[in-house]
Amino acid sequence: MAISFTEENYLKVIHRLSEATSEDISTNAVAELMQTKAASVTDMLRKLAEKGWVNYQKYQGVRLSPAGEKIALSIVRKHRLWEVFLVDKMGFNWDEVHEIAEQLEHIESDDLVNKLDEYLGFPKTDPHGDPIPNKEGVLPELAYSHLSEIKANKTCKLMGVAQDSAVFLQLLTKLHLSLGAKLDIKEINEFDRSIFVSINDAEPIFISHEVAKNILVKILA
Amino acid sequence: MAISFTEENYLKVIHRLSEATSEDISTNAVAELMQTKAASVTDMLRKLAEKGWVNYQKYQGVRLSPAGEKIALSIVRKHRLWEVFLVDKMGFNWDEVHEIAEQLEHIESDDLVNKLDEYLGFPKTDPHGDPIPNKEGVLPELAYSHLSEIKANKTCKLMGVAQDSAVFLQLLTKLHLSLGAKLDIKEINEFDRSIFVSINDAEPIFISHEVAKNILVKILA
DNA sequence: AATATTTTTTAGATTAACCTAAAAATTTAA
DNA sequence: TTAAATTTTTAGGTTAATCTAAAAAATATT
Ligand SMILES: [Mn+2]
Ligand SMILES: [Mn+2]
Ligand SMILES: [Mn+2]
Ligand SMILES: [Mn+2]
Image 1 (cartoon, rainbow over the protein chains, first blue to last red):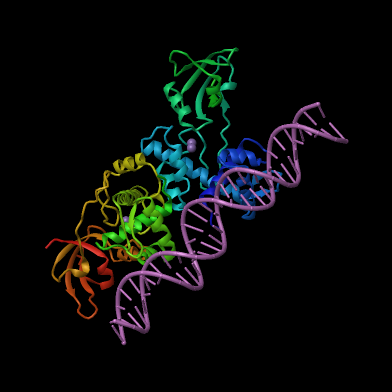
Image 2: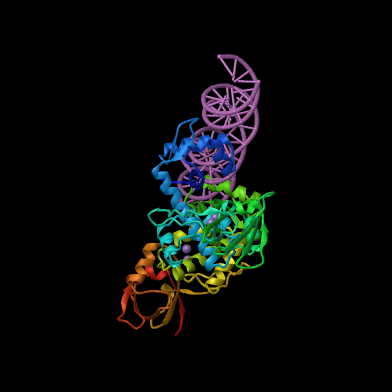
């Protein structure tokens, strides 16, 4: 069954929303991420249900069917592999690749995706620390914590980010926060929940709660 | 001004037809290459003229404007660079890359194209011997001859093919005809215009006129 | 429980890209 | 130079994806 770019993007968005909750996804939530109107979403959900890619009852919200899940994961796989390619091979920075990958994720060729995977050395995560589904669509579960939830005096390692936006990633770069960085949490300020933290043993700096919420870490000690 | 995949493909097709002639391109010729109907072409030509990418008067045929030429060349550049990538880096055969490049040529990022060009070592030609326009859209003119026009007892070098179809390229591969091959023309048969030729000093074989017409060569001696 | 608010769906239009069939213009042939 | 054949355009529709405005359903508040 033929699939359009638009349909692929809807499935991807429903998948993304489903990762954060076990509930059905609302029409409005999809509309917001798709940057479109609720009425358009209703039309599309009916069509996706028709094609067997989602389960949808009007007024009840939507969730992916196994077939839809498989498609969504294949798009996520392509998106993240292309991001690795753009950073590792083309020399882009991590804040420059998302938009280009949004286009490349729709290129249709299983052969190409698998050759690309091999060429990149079968990476497990993309430049933002997000896990890459394998050929069978299995997504390794990486259970990281948000930096905003870590207690003072802990040491942790930066494993990923919860946002792809260029402004956010550029800010991290300015703060010398990149994947793998060691973070020593010196103090958490009650007033604004900002964090005083040493990055790779450098002089400690302040990081806002807003930023900390979007940083994923593994606790080392 | 925004451009759609479809508009890009029309400009590319008009460009391709314009390379073979200095006359205006007919609606029917465009329709055939676009695999669509003449009526649809008329609609699109009006629209492309509106956008300033072609010069078109009804019943008079069409040709690219300088702006349209520039767009067409940028798509050709992307198509051919991606083909080099697919063969040189991904390990595809030359008969497997055209369809994938048809998709990749529409990816929009000047930054990516130029980084890809550099990564590939600024190739001058694609895997089929076709010249690659540079960043400024300048297409090096490679004046090759068709093998079908070469006289007997000449020696030449295979520089390119005049067709991208998989069946044709696979046949060449079977005959050990690849880019750079040395061809010693032993005899041309009057009856069917088939050519008796030695490839890289191997035992001579017969090549049909139909095949020879689509092989581009440089005469060595 | 009744009412107000919010969410979602329906109804009716719009736009891009395509189609078929018929009309008009151009080219070829008698 | 007319008539016939071919090419191209116009006219009128279709489909996918979108929109706005209004109606209907679900949820929240008095
Ligand atoms: Mn991304
Ligand atoms: Mn990413
Ligand atoms: Mn090609
Ligand atoms: Mn080529």
